[in-house]
Image 1: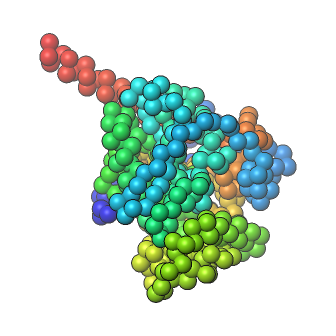
Image 2 (image 1 turned 90 degrees about the vertical axis):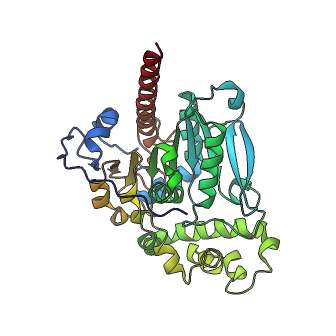
Image 3 (image 1 turned 30 degrees about the vertical axis):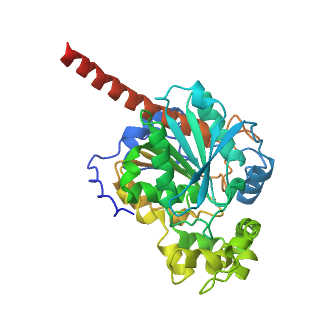
Length: 388
C-alpha cells in the first residue's frame, strides 16, 4: 500500500457559484469549476416524493424493498487475487465485443454486503450503459453470491482487492478512461483509495454517495434509537454471508471468534469476531478509526463529487469532512435535506424509479469524459501537425 498522496494546494479563489436552490447545501474547493456542469440539477428545489420521501426511515426502507430493479443480462468474471481470494466483476453481457476499446469504463462499488443485484446499482448501471459507457460492478468477497476461496472476507480498511480490480480493468482496456461510483461502504473504500493509493491516478473522476466518512461516528449513530434496525440488518447480512462459507473459517484460532461473527446481531459483533482480527487490529475501535475516508479526502487529486442526505440514518451529517472538502480544489459536496440512506425518492422517476441523484451523477461523469476526450483529441492534432 502506498503512502498518502501529497495534499493538493488549496485554491485561493473565492467561491463565486451561487446559482443553486437554497434547499441544497453546495460547497467545495471545486465548486466554481464543477457546479456549472450540473447547474440544471442544482437550480431546482429538492422536492421529496410525498409520504415515501417524507421520513428518513420510511424512505430508506421503501427504496430498499420497493424500488424497481432493472432487468439486465450480466456476464460474471471471477478474479483471483494475489492471496488466492476471489472477487467478481459483473459486466453487461455482449459489451466486450459491442463497444470500442476506448469506451469509458464505469466501475461501481456497492455498499456493505451489497452487489450487482441491488436496485440502486442496477439503475446507475443502466443509465451509464444507455449513455454508451462500459459498466462493471465490483462485488466484494462473498457478496452477490461471489465465491469465497480463503478464510478472509473484506473490510472498510482493505484496499488490496480494489487495487487489483483497477489494475485488471485498466490492463484490459488501456485506451479507456476509468471512472468510479461508490455507495455507502463502497464510497468509503473508493475515497480512501483515491487519497491513499498510487494507482488512484488511473481514475479520471469519481462519485461518492451516502459515504459514512467517519466510521466511529457512524457506528455510534446506528447504535441509537430506530437506527439500530439497520445495525441489526447489516450485521445479519454479514453473518449470513459468513455462514455460507463457514467450513473455511471454523478452524481459525487465536483471537478469532467465528461463533460470534456467524451469529452477529450487529456490525460490531461481526467485526469483533472476524474483521478486526483478519486485518490486524487490536480492537474494533482501532479498526474503525483507521478506516475513515474522512482522513484521506484532503489528499484526493481526482475530480470527486460527494452527495449526502442530511437525514441519512446510517451516514450522519456531522461525519462529513466539510472543511477538508472546502479546501480541496478537486472536491464538490452536495447535501440534500432529505434522502435517507440510499433512498433519494425524489425527482421525475420517483417513487419506484432511479434515485434523484442518478441524472446528475451521469451528467457530471459525461462532462469529465468530454473534457478528457477534448484534451486527447487536441494532443493528437498537435502530433499530426508536427508530423506534417
